[in-house]
Image (cartoon, rainbow, N blue to C red; front, side):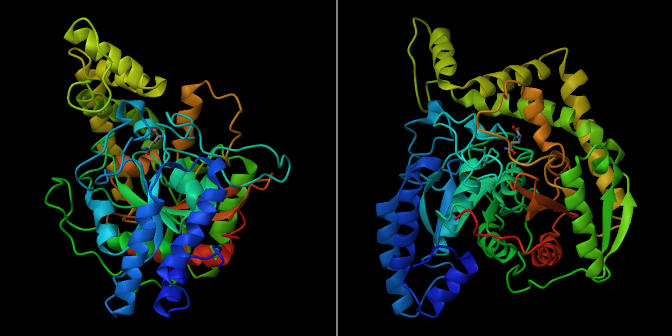
Length: 486
Ligand code: GLN
């Protein structure tokens, strides 16, 4: 059977008994096997998946199918999965097999979704190209029309999650977004990804990077697929102190194209310095929303220029604290030494990659006595100002339109030894995490060499439904070829 289908379509096919869960899961396993060279998976769980498919078929036959019964998905290797190795892309967790399941992956499992395995990612979710994984890079399944033999990066840190959907290896994936890690790889791989409001999905059982910014979210071909996934990922969890106790709307049932009467903000700070092809795409986005009856309003988010420096203080600070637990005593790998200090040193030196070590050093520095107020406290204050800026903007507009990334995917082997250049990939996405807002990336067009580009919509807290609905207007107008890389 054909794997050029959306999650929504596959669900219809299962509901109408056009195919069985077993056939569906087998089809995607076959594709995953064929596309092993993309390196999407760190751990495959195909046998478990086939067993689960059999159980799903049984439930379907008995008339008590679960809402996502039989649908093949896969989890970013940041979600702790019971009895299945969870590495977070790091050598230090190479043999870590959790005895518990994260709330989000558990919710999907309870809804009947079937995981094909654990997806590759930048180590501890630090990166924008999936080049920081201890398990090797992931290849973007798209080919450019100027250099068809060249491999491109899928973006990061959820590079495996994005490439797996784009390549048709599974129907949808879980991912996480601390500064852009759902939206940026979604844009690079021509798929849809939403970073929900901070606290909408539980962080329990997700390997922590920067706890005040981390948020789980889905990636899939289309808006309706993401709506279906988020529906079953989100929800209050008393095991996460920052979990929001709100009723989750039926995003999927309430999906309807929106545009008429919607005020769309265009922040001038996001337009300055845009390259020509990204600017052209943004203009198209504006025209599509205008055609749907939206009003375009120029706005200013003056604190935008402080977002990246603020992020690169807060995120490393929280990471240095979160990653202190990997000491070679309680978790994962251990490299012995003559003393306890030496054991710590050896374990952490061997276990962590270069970027993770860089972040731990920056984070430890900005939290150290004498510098804490100058850096960390100050960054927290600027975070608040960024959030105030958005609050102000949302008194004038309903939603904000921006590009997702400043450019399309770059070559896997292009020179990339400048960490700051890499950090600039997230210039349009980090603000959203700092302000705890939801943001969605929708595949909307192409660069001049034929690689995908995305548009981002940002809304006020808990406006996921509106983002889906306005996003649907963009999706329909863009008519993006969702299965071109499958
Ligand atoms: N690229 C950003 C970083 O390296 C964001 C990562 C993320 O969202 N997990 O920190």
